[in-house]
Length: 124
Image (cartoon, rainbow, N blue to C red; front, side):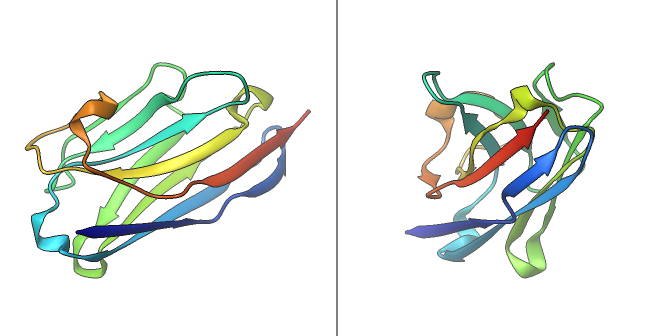
């Protein structure tokens, strides 16, 4: 079993930045792909970004490409999401996810473990 805990969410003005972290514990050696998803009020959960085990391969949703950067530190079992130029439409609960699949994955079905989420609110 793998346990994921997100942190770093909060309230920020439009144009500002936040850095989310996700600490993994438990059977972390089984983790390959990791990703971030988000869910806004009244909307379905959507893919944000994903990264493979090596950290060299990443993939982003078009809505965040060029503004968000996903990275990971395998030695510390931590996933990051640097969010820049934030917009009010980025407001959502952000979830960290981890899976056993090789490579980058944008489907929530490819992830086996999920965190509880951290709220990000961007004011206009």
